Length: 193
Image 1 (cartoon, rainbow, N blue to C red):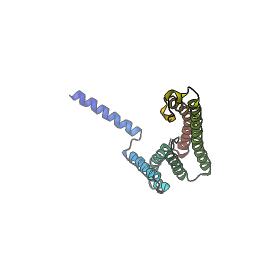
Image 2 (image 1 turned 45 degrees about the vertical axis):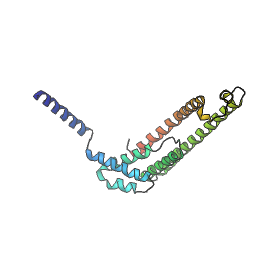
Image 3 (image 1 turned 180 degrees about the vertical axis):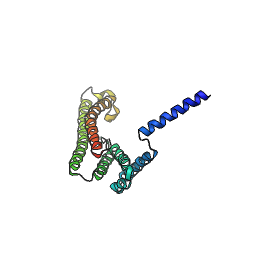
Image 4 (image 1 turned 60 degrees about the vertical axis):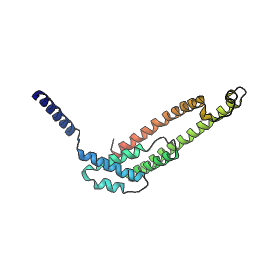
């Protein structure tokens, strides 16, 4: 039993050394969570003084900022809905607020917002083109409508779903990489990588 206890003590000592080396201070986690809570309030439409919260954090300001940035970046996605587009725009606004409306970042975030809008436009155009192609196939003699004996919604056809998913995956792959690169640049600029 004494051997097990000493092994357990060695494991605990090693964990303590690793936590100290990594700066695993429980206070920093609380500060990061405080930043996340403040950012969530901002995302919900209220306008707390983001920089005031960071400045009041003192020595742990970096952790508070890290928490805020993580929430804002998490909300900047390739928008599938209008709500996601609104959340992305709100996340960009929060990041701009933290950056102190730096002129260089204003342009950068303008590009990011434009990219998200272009994504939505391309997504809509692809959908319309796919629907038009399938509608033509359905109208042809012996087409899908003739095979089923009725005109159904395109979404009910597995082939349409398969083609749409393939096209969407390709589009998402193109835009996701660009968006991830923009997010990484924001993290580096704000010093919270």
